[in-house]
Length: 347
Image (cartoon, rainbow, N blue to C red; front, top):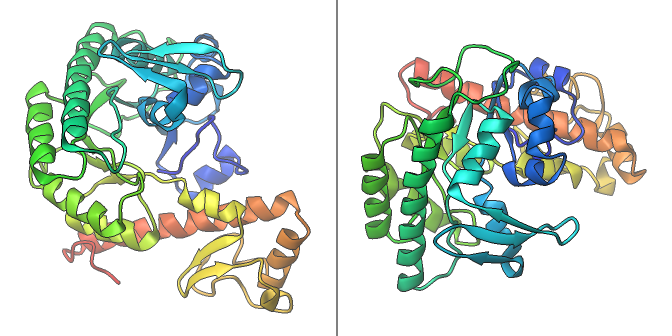
């Protein structure tokens, strides 16, 4: 899932996203809550109509963004008080208000409110954080079940990407528990007892070694049902998403392809290319000869390097289109390999 933090994948219009074959976008509850505001989006018919996107949308709970504020937040059993990174104004998120915000946005998949545990953290801190997430998961589900039919009335409708008793929205639970297998197992089992149509593995990509990330994912997957979507949050490189798909992960999101593009780092079948390097100034070849995206089909490495060196906005646009295309092609190859009975091991 490409990340569209502010109802926009930076630098790429929705018609191009459709052309790329994107099935589902991720929107950010925290940022949209602050600007333009949930009520404003609701009045305009919900996030789909607001951003003119007829395909699926997943919104995160806002928990990770609040976690990243660090010194600007205070966490209690009731919820989180935090200060806006925009103007310093004070706000409060609870499981109930986070659900109300996501229901108001009208996303197809919404996430239970959770607390992301920092790394490293001692055992007592991880246990306390996990218990808080479980309590908030129960409250999230209770509020969702009571209010799930309150989606914006003129929301764009289409076939939901997940099986759910409610065809409009589905609420996913989030597994926390730090980096230890025992707490991850407990978190998974207790979250399954609450019951959700899909489950996310959260609390990773917070500074831990990549090898440890994989260990946690593998140990957690052992306790999640295979007949419901399994979503790994915040991952990863093209190589990592192939590995995690092979382990049984169904959904992933990451800002890496778009963020790296804005810094001139491009993913290709031959490895990473830093297009800012002077050695590409006279290179007439395509960025990736094995890629058929609109960028590789038309522009040379020399031109892409020139755009980046000249600080042209078009550089960010074209770089982002290519990186998204490369990620999507990678996932299409994974799905094709699975359909052929070979799992995700196609490289």
